[in-house]
Structure formats: structure tokens, C-alpha cells
Amino acid sequence: MINLDEQVKKVWKAENTEAKREAMKELLAISHATALTKANALRAINSLSGKKLDSFATNYAFSGYGMKVT
Image 1 (cartoon, rainbow, N blue to C red):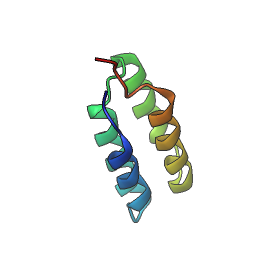
Image 2: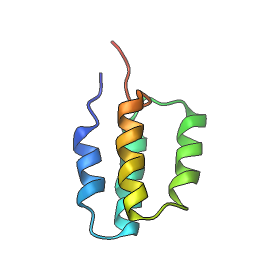
Image 3: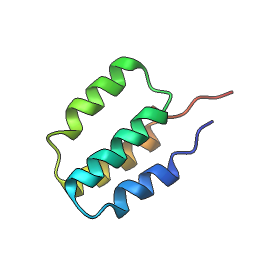
Image 4: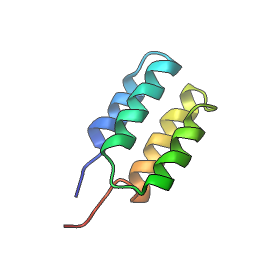
């Protein structure tokens, strides 16, 4: 199972919205989500503000999209 905590922390620590988007893209890239889920998330992050990106990253990680039981 992938632990996305470090990637979520990168999103939280990013200093501006664009840096948060880049960190979120990294989080999405390593998650085990389906291609459709990743595409929808990538589309969503383009319209979110900094605080909402923090929440989105947390919810994404906790929702199980990034996890795979091995």
C-alpha cells in the first residue's frame, strides 16, 4: 500500500497555488487511481484555490484512490 502522507505534506507546504498544483500532480502520478479518476482530479485542481487544494489533497489520500492492497 502506498502511503501518500509525504505528498500531501508537500501540497500543504507549497508556498503558492501553482506550487500546490505541481505537488498535487506528483501525488496523482504515484497514486494507484484509475486513469479516469486521475484525469478528473487533474481537471479539478486547475480551478481550485490554495486552501481548497490542501483539502482536496487530504481527501484524495484518505479516500483510498491512492492506495492499493498488495
